[in-house]
Each structure stands twice: as C-alpha cells, then as structure tokens.
Amino acid sequence: MNVTSRELEKDYKIIPADKNNNIVTNIISDELKLDKDSKNISEDKNNNILENKNNNIPENKNNNIPEDKNNNKNNNILEDKNNNILENKNNNDTEDKNIVTNIISDRAFPNFPNELSFIVLSHLNQQNRIKLSRVSKAFRNLTYESILWREAIIYNTRGFGDNALQILKDVRYLDARASKLDDGFIRKLVSRSPGKSLRVLDLSVNEITDKAMVEIGHNCQNLQKLYLEGCRNLTEVQPLRFLSPHLTTLILSHCSELSDESIEELFKYLGPNLINLDLDGCHRITNYGIYKISEHLNNLKYLAIDGQGIEDNSLLEIFKKCRFLNLFSMSFCDVLTDNSLEGIIRYLTPNLRFLRLRKGSEFTEEGFNRFFHGLSLRNHSFYSLDMSECLNITESNLNQMSHSKLRWLNLDWCWKLKEESLYRILTLYPELQEIMMTGCNEITCERLLDMKFPKLKVLNLLSCRNVESDIIKKICELNKGLYIIGYYGEVYKDGIQIGYNEEIYIEREEIELMVGGREKRWGILNIGNWLRFYRGYSI
Image 1 (spheres, helix red, strand yellow):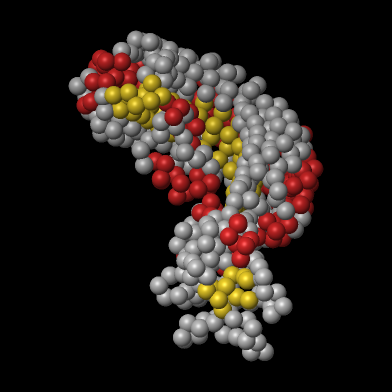
Image 2: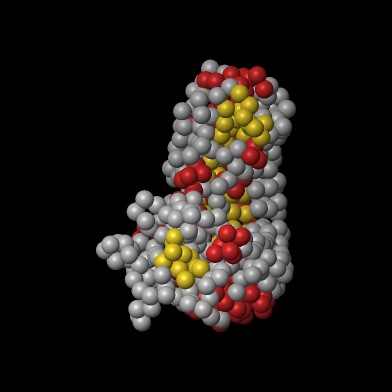
C-alpha cells in the first residue's frame, strides 16, 4: 500500500525505528466477516509495519535497502526527522511522493514450518484467532486457513459473505444457535463445500422452516448430529431421512408443531443408527408416535419425550423394546399410573442411569414403595433421578431407596416430605452431590446443624418457608464449599450470602465444561437449574 508522507502524518502515528534500524510502521489488516468489529484496525504498540501491495523487499546482511532491478539510483532512501525511512517513488514526483517502505516477512512465524504454526494456532479459540488476524497480513492469511476452522461458531449472519464461506469450507462442527439465520442462509451454507464436510450442526432457536430441512437432507449426508431445539416453525422433518447412513443424534425438543405424521416416516429410515432422540416439548406426539419409536428405534440410548397424554401401555413398549437406554426423560407423567412404575422395574436393565418422571400425580405411595423396593432387590442405582412434582412420595418411600451411586436428586414440590426425609436422604446416599427440594414446606434443616456432608455441593431449599437463613449460614460454615439456596433464591456459601441462584455457578465447573465445548451441549449451568439432571451424559 503506497501512501504519501503527508497522508502518513495525517492518518497514522509515526513510530521511530528500533536500535537495529529495522523499519517500523503500521499495518492495516482486514478482518474476518464472522467478527462483529469488522471495521476495527488493530495497532501494534511495538514496531508495527506498513505493508505495500508490491513484493516485500528483503534486507541484506548490512541492513541496506537494495536498489530496484534497473539499479535506478533515483529510488534513494531518505530519513526524516523521526528516523522513518522514506523512499522517493519517482524522479518526476519530488513533492509529497515519499512513501513508507515496508520490509516484512510474508510469513507470520518465519522460523516455523507451516505445520507447526497450525498446531500452535489450533490451541486458540475462535475469538482469539480473529484478534490475531488483525496483527498483520501474514497473520491474517495464516489464521484464515480453513484447516483452523474445523470448529466454528456463528453469532449472527449479518455481513456473512463468500469469503467467510470459503474459510469454512472444511468445517465439521458448526454452532449457529440463536444466530438469526434463515432458510436462505442455510441454502447458501450447505449447498457449497461446508455441507459435505459437516459432522455436527446446531441450528437451535432459529426461524427456519421445512425448506431448510430439504436443503440439509440433500446436502449434508455426512452429518452425524443435528440440533434443532426450539425451531418452532418446523412441521415436516421427513427430508432428513437422507441422513440415515450416519445420523446418530437428533434433537427436536420444543419443535412444537411436529406431529406423529411428521416423524413416522423419518423413524423408519433412521432405524438402527439413531441412538439419541429428544422430543421434549413436542406435545403433539401421541401414543401412536411413541409406539413407532419403540418399533423402529430399538438402539436408542437417550430418549426424552414430552409425555402429555401418554399412557402406560405405550410407555412400557419403550422399556420393553429399547433395551440399551441409558437415559429416559418424561416431562408430564400425569396420565401414568402405578402400572408404569411396575413395568419399569420389570423391564429394567443395568444400563439405565438417568431417569426423569416429572409430574407423576397419579403415582401412589404404595406404588413408589414397590418401585424403590424393586430397585433395591436388583441392587440398581441411578446417577440422576428426577421425581419432581410427584405429590405422593413420602418418607416411607425413601426408606425403601438404596442408591449408593446417586449423584443428583430432584424432589421439588414433593409436599409430603418432612424434616426426617432430608436427614435420611443425606445419610443414605453418601455420594450425593446435589439435592433439589423446592417448596418442601415441612423442612426446617435443624437436624442438619451438626452434620458434615463432604460430597454435597448444592442443597436447593428455594420456597421452603420454614427454613431460617441463620440455620442455613450455620450449615454452610460447617460445610465449606457447600452452596445452599434459600427461600428467595439467595445463595449462601461459607456462612455468607454470595448472590442469587441465577448468577452463581459451581467453582471450577465452568472450566471443566468449557473443555468439552458444545459436545457437553448443556453448557455451563447455574446452581439449582433442573437441566443439571443431564450432567454426566453428553450427547
């Protein structure tokens, strides 16, 4: 880039040469359109270099600047008052034609082979790579190599042009969650190279329609995991049947317009390959749809359904035929009876470690007794158990429980549980790390004042009106590192209030989950979030 000395003084800060007479100037670098600050110009405080469009001029051993090919002596090197080296561009243009000469390697790491440079940069996340691209043209060219963009996040699609698509030509893991993309962008993305290389695609919470499903089905045939959570405009997903050879994970939770007809044909094609399916919030799926799941998807390991209107017989077909289930979640069990509890015990396999049966208002105390007694006879222990809003669970049921490996327990709004219940839970389950007891008004926690719980991390007492804050503080003082959520959502740790549950996260857990990235899916969850049921199970 050629600029006159007057333009240089006007637009850029002149930086003196260093002690070795190396040329120092500023670099103006372009920026990837994925970045939100596409017009920012990064300025290096330590010897940035202005680069012209022509070839860089090497420095000889004596640090002299060589003449041009014709030995034109008119291209003399002049030094201004600030020791910047100015070059006369032309004999006839003597006034205001001095330019800053750029002397810089065309490689970001001149002494490193490209392979080693890529290894170094691969340890940077996307945001840091984009920042690095502003340092110089050499760094920009290096950081924009597609090999470094196998994983990418799109925050928004504004200004997303062909250059960005070229950079993503080899992308395998693409997170475009809540990025405001539409069908047109999906068509542009998957109809080119990225469509063929994609393995994991997250389009959750976007205003896409059935047209996008057609584009994905025809162009992303190597796709293994597809996340469409909260895409409420979807009514037809049958075009995804073309993904059948490789698709193992399909997340359709809260796609509320999907029905039995929408999924029936799809499940026939996906068949034995699909192992993770989420239909939570899809309230139009009926008993017929549940039967079709049990008929065609026998290799499922993860299944979450909404449950509205689902009856005992169709549910038990799932446990009878899907023998590899590790996780089963049902958000509304209000139609189920004790027959379901007995059937789960009958068809129980050692694989099932995560069980969520929420809102089981028709389950009886006697039914729970038989259920927990059956688990004890089989020496079966869950990792996560959610029985929230099952109103008939009582203290006698807890006496039947024997879950030595239980880590997470949700008993929110189980109103019949009393003070002794919490005490027994904490003594019976030595490995328990988190317990949710929102709205259990018979609890006071006085029995816990002199007890230590070395493994317990979170005790949720939200809306427990008989638990005094002074008691909570004393329990926290005795159990260092324990988080307790009080009546209003205030969080106590080490005897003092540290904030509210929506803004508090378990120490070091943030780092742990960041290592897993989007494969952890649920991300970093604040304490007291019911989605922590899924921690320990990655899809």
